[in-house]
Length: 300
Image (cartoon, rainbow, N blue to C red; front, side, top):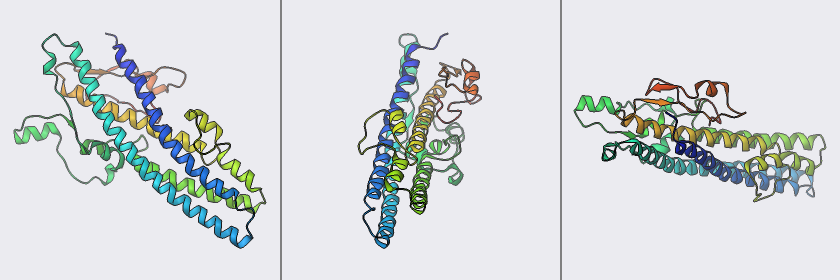
């Protein structure tokens, strides 16, 4: 049985959605970097003692601004992923109802999304998550309570990026490493007599505050302080969107195993498809016994 075209349209919509969220986070970061570099351009007219003091002030402000960016990005991702989980579970439920005979659609089990689910995905390190919780199935069996299907905070805590980190820690790492990069590039440039305008261009390329364009265009216009970071943010957002969308979908499927007993792994096949995803494409697995995307960063 071929996969419904609506599933492919959903995959395209998820890709567009991740681009939109990533662009929001990227532009916020770029503006902070550009502002710091614009301040750097203005120090040429200062005497040496005042110039050193001004550089320290610029770096301190950059660190503070990047901390604010980290917190804002975490909040953005939490809100976006929470809404995504709800929409994706509703979408899968609707797809299941379409394949059932008339009158049987009402038997599709729904999935409850905990208000803390996305916050747990974004901020909770599973290695530090020391609260022992029973699975929904085991809890129901032990207590005799009716089985419920939900994406809980505990389940959110098990979702990490492919490198084992959580989103909050990744954004914090970006902020810290880029502040250090700014300091190193400026210090080394001034020590070797490099003109400030050249240092500035090396850091942010030709980017301007409020720069318009696609993520690819923004990265191409940027410099050492922005290009790699723009790609990192895109990978983080795209991967996280993929993870949450798949977690919501799988939870709905598992809640309705009387309707569907297996799932089919569907990869986006093009020149950028990884070997592992290409090899898994089209294979069917029982729930809980097979691989799930994302298999790697930027997995689609």
